[in-house]
Length: 130
Image: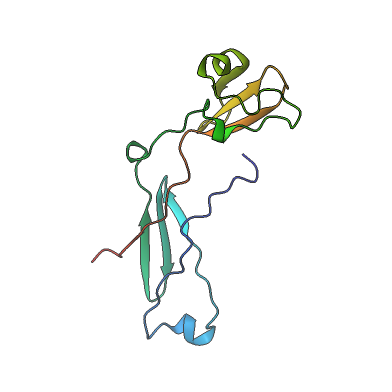
């Protein structure tokens, strides 16, 4: 949705010593482009670098009933509750509209929040193919 643009790897690409772009502008930042889901590429005249996010099977799925993911209202009497039976009774959990997250709503305080299916994966840079 709006404002949820993926940013890609945080590390800048490594330029070759002979790179003409870096000689012309030493502060240049080459942007990462998502070629397909989870695969990023940064291309310069001196070469290209690639990044692959770990597949979803390698990540641990978040639990929408985990108290660390709660965003209750400040006055909600159940904001500190961790009893699984009570949580199943007061929290309504359903898949989000855009996918990739759950929409959780508390029946007591009537607040709603998103819980992503997976936590933000750590960024790993892959060397360019040879």
